[in-house]
Image (cartoon, rainbow, N blue to C red; front, side, top):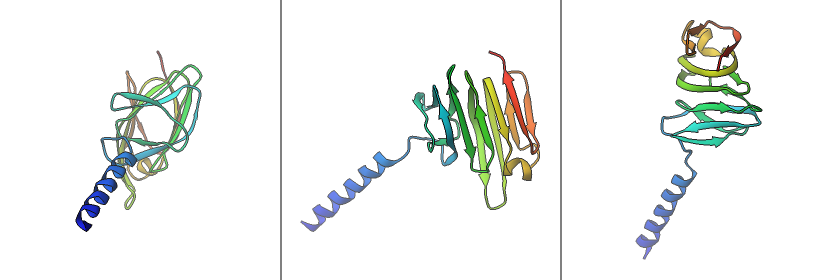
Length: 151
């Protein structure tokens, strides 16, 4: 009797953990949504869902905004990315070790407008932070910038 109750309890705890687990496939959270307005979504595992402040973002997520949309996110190294209307950017590569402030970041800006302020990755490893567009790759060396990719 006690064994049955214990097994049921364990099965319930396992099921609850699965339901509560975030829907991501590629590891730890790399950023968090700080602001979102209008049509703003994240594409993850082939599914688009609206974003709101506080949502976690993961490597390989793609952010999209509509004609009235914008998104502002902060990465775990304190880099900041803001997307304007009609934009699409993929968080293609991101890793950061907070014990030594080393890491790499690659963001693919496919269309639209973006502004970035670099964080600890660019400060500790010049050129470890990159933004790729359809026609060029920018190495970010500890600065802020804005960019527009034609549509």
